[in-house]
Length: 341
View 1 (tube, one colour):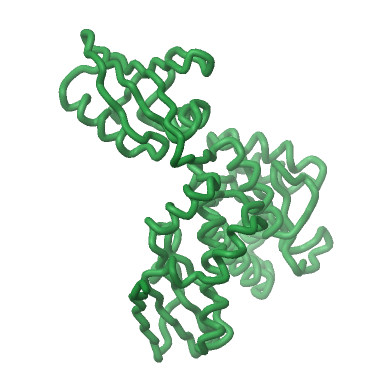
View 2 (tube, rainbow, N blue to C red):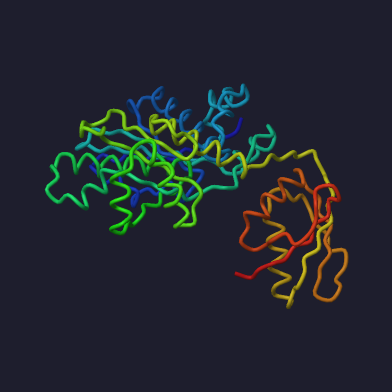
């Protein structure tokens, strides 16, 4: 039987639970969950929920949680966990656990069950809350409303980090402030489409902590460029990430070996050649590669993929170091250019 290397740390004194103490967003294989108690059943339940969260974060697709193979895995999450910490905050009455999952085990589970891998992680999304705008232009706004808005913003940003979404808050000039304040539910989407383009972004999320009469909303309602109707934040994030990940996810098949020829042009020196080899080794869809020939400044490689050519192109298109110069899916041959950033 495999020995389970648990590290149990119970912090009895009050500590800060801020992101600066435990920055989950920088580690895709750690997850923080609330606890009902420190008993075995409560810890197991939190561990199962955390494994769901990890799978959701890695795949970017909420539908995978409905698969039988995933449902069975979360029944016995211990085999995927290296260690965990139990945390208490007496002032807030919070009990939480931070679970550190084994990256190799999680990736093996994803690959063997041919689940999608999301390569668009840490995607930036324009984030707009009208109440934050009101705080800036209405200095006499009630302290209670101001505090509610700020705390809501912090909570929503942390929830977005769980789905590997980075919220980008816009800095509005006077004209933009006037336009935003005079936008309603029907005109706001077009306004945010244009504002997102200013920041080089394609996606946006707008969340409202109160209705047009100033009455606080519970729960907070949100719109996105994928869900124009006002729905809950969790539903908005699910819709947003599922739609984003559709174009930036791929599936691995460990039993597949698809050969593809690529040409990488304009290699200026040996250092660049080594960098290119390092990148090829790092791509998950590449089982192996072989240098076939060097012609001048062009290198010809034969790649063996455990995914499709279209998935390989997705990775290339999202990479800052490569661009496709020529090639199509029918010939299974691509000509690339490498950029030393």
